[in-house]
Structure formats: structure tokens, C-alpha cells
Image (tube, rainbow over all chains, first blue to last red; front, side, top):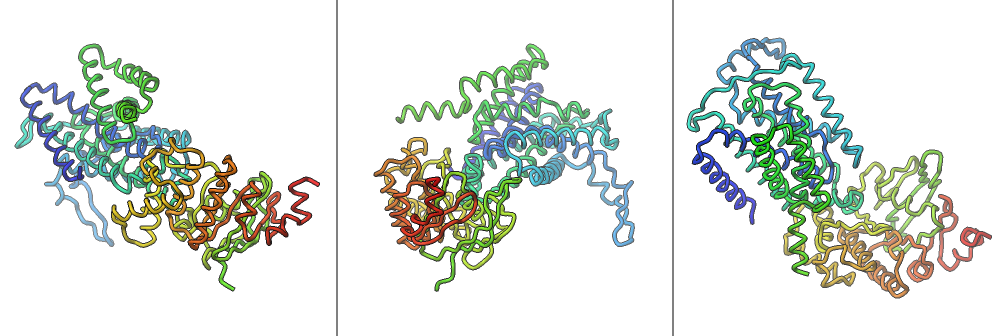
Length: 336
Length: 245
């Protein structure tokens, strides 16, 4: 299926999902659905680097939080208090006041660009490392970014920051429905992008890096350039997934922005679904995300990571290539 | 005399205090069939890695097709026309045989021509390469389903897909039976007849002798002989190195 046709199908599915949620008419479903969608974006983003090129990123929470904190920073930004010095001329920025607070789609773009640039920089510094060394370097990045944010007073530091969201938005109505709709759109874009990459020459290049980097270089694949593209795209989507978070939680502190749950889920979901295709992270995120949401209201949110851990152990034993790998294996056996 | 295709001058490669290669000088002319031999640990693969850019040499220069390639990355050297096969086959395991061949076509041939082969052209080139190495009918197989000799052929076909001027075949016959070795030798000769210069790194002397027009011997990182195969194998230094006399 061509990418444009796939995108159209994805939009139709998304519209049906939104319609069904609206029919249900319970705000809780939008709350819970937002989290699952957020994990679809996060897992798909992780998979662009971790699944397609085989470089495991333990620092997902950092990229996610960069998106979230860029929103906090821009939300608190008051242009009237700032002047811009250009060639000795002081230009007051008050004329930008009507634009603020920026709408969420713009904040998402900002979050994506900033996280993407951090991804590019991180990639440039760390991609000469491989395997566990690269993974540890990304973990170190998460610690560094968290320390910086915790000590940055402007975004609330360790105290955290409050974001007051409007009660409603024009056209959509309820703000939570609006956030859900935005995350739904982002999920469609992320999945469509991942699929387009997978079916493209870029995707072939990523797969060679995962399979054998030395052989890839010897075949003419510019591995460093491709890995930088992967870290940038992956970081950008993680940042975009995090950008609306302050409006969802209304209070953001480093402990919640850099929560272990983001790092663990962004890895576990593609592993459970299958890392070599776009559908793996989607399936894994829907499965694990939904189970966690059900556990939150039936048992306690405290058991969420325990559930993820147990499922991950089960999958490593039963289906190391994830659900998609399991199904592909059945078909392959059937064909043989 | 034709200009050398490959010139290695005063090349030295050290790993810490250990000199894997010391002051290696050699030239290879277009169309040559060169055998590179030496005991284990003599530096053959290290030399190939330095020429290809997988390893960086501390001193010395490598010139390819008249231009220095020092400082270029491996994929850039591949695009200039150097290709290699590996001592242990390294196929792209998540891809079919045909897709393995598509990679150099996409990333080397297309990049070199600054244009894109159409899907039909890619299919045609892959089929031609598979015919060349005798893997017709294996296009949709996975590398794990191939035999050892088929894996070696895939390795050579993937190197050839980059349309190289120089092919370095690193122990392309290791672990093969006598008839399979003969099969690979005749394949390499066919590739050479298509204008590809070949450096064969090999331990199987019968294969080296039947393939090579020129023989280079490395021992402990030093070149100890370079010349006509029949003369080189009678060189006392070479005999001493191989037989320990």
C-alpha cells in the first residue's frame, strides 16, 4: 500500500476511534486514551532508533521531558518582559504578546525541534559507541537532562510548575477531548512516518545497520549519517509526545516528567509488539497501555511497572521477536 | 605501463605496542589477479581493513585510482570502486538474498550515478548478479537457508553489486570442499574477466596458485615476497615462514 493510501486509512481509523470515544461520552476514556496514544507515539519513536537500527536508547524519558519542559518554558514566556538586541538596537518583544500562550500544535513543533536537535547532538557524540555502551550513554543523558531541569528555576526546578489549561476550546469543546484529538493526530503521523521509513531506502539502510554495521559500510551505506537521522527523528517524536503533557497533568515536576515509566514502557512496548515493523510498537503500546490503564482503576497505578516487567519476561521467553514475530513465524511455518 | 589502481605506500598499523603491519608497500594494476598469503596473524585481514577504511593506519598512504583515500570512510571508498567480502560471511540476515544485493545497488551504484535505478532495473541487476554467481532461484531465500558455499557466493555477489573496480576477497573459500573451492575459483576468474581487479586473501594454496598471476606474502606484518607465484613459493624466506625451517 502506498504511503498516502496508508495515511488516509490511518486517518479514517483515527476518526472512527474518536467517534466511538465521543459516543461513549465518558471523559475518563479520553484521559485513559490519551495515555495509550502517548505511548503509541513514544514506542514508535523509540522503535525508529532501537528497532530499525538496533541502537537501544534508555534515555527516552529525557527526550520526552525535553518536549514537556519546552512547553512549560514557552508557556511561562512573557514577551513583554524581554528585549532583543540586534546590532546595538534594543527591540522590545511586547509585539509578540498576542501570540502567547502558544497553541498546543505550535508547542508540539517546538518540543519536537528541540528534542530532535538534542537527539542529533546526542547521536553525534555517542553513535561511535555500540551495544551496551551506547545504551549506558543514553541513560547518562537522561540523568544529565534531569539534573539540569531540576536546577532550572525558570521552569519550576524541583518544585515543579503549574499549567492552567482552559476549560474548553472552540470547535472541539472539552479540553481533554482536544488533547486526545491532538495526541491521536500525532499517533497517526508517527505511525505513518515509521511505516514510510520502513518501506523506503532509508528503512533498508537502517536494517543493514541493525543486521551488520561493518557489512553495511562495506556495501556503501553511510551508517553514521543514517544513525544521526534515526536519533533525530526518534528524539523529535519523543519530544512531540511529551509536549502536551503539562496541559494534561496541569502540574509537572522532574519526578513525573522523567518518570521511569516512560523509559521502561517505550522499550517494553516495541519489544512486546515486535521491533522490526511499524505495527509492533503500535500493538505493544495498545496492549500494555490498555492493561496499565485497566490496572490503574481496578488495582493501583503502583502495579503498572510490575505488570510491564512480568509481561516483558514472558515475551522474552515465549516470543522473543514480539507478537508480530510470533505471527510471522506461524505464517512462515505454514508456507514451508 | 598502466597507472596503478591501488598503491599502498609505507603503511603501518599498530594496536597499542603491537605492530600488525609495518611499512607495507605494494601496487596493484588494473585487471590484476593478486594472491595475498601469509600465516595466521601475519596481517592480511588488517591490510584489507586498512585499504577499505575499516581500520585507520597510523602512517603511510593508500591511493586508489590515482587519488589518496586516507581519511575517507569505508562507504566512501566503496563508492569509489573498492569492494570486499568478509572472512566470515556477514549477510544482512533480516533480508532475502535479493534484498541483500539491492543494498549496494541502492547505496553505492545509485549514489555514484546520482540517480535512482527503477524497481525493474534493480530486479534485473539482482537477477543478473544471481546468475553470475550461480544463485538463480535463491532470490527469495533467507541467508539462514543457504549452504556454506551459497553464503560465500552471496558475499561475492553483494560485493560485485557495488560494481567495483577492485574486489578484495578475504578467505572466500574457508571451510569449503575441494569441488566448492574450484567453483569459487572459477567464479573469481570470471569476475576478473569482466574487468574487476581482484586481491584474493587465502590459505588454500591450490586455489591461490590456480587463481593468482602475482603473489604477495606477509609474515608478522611485513611483506617478505612479491612476484610470480611459482617463484615466490620457492623463495627461501617464504618456505621458512610456512614450514618453520
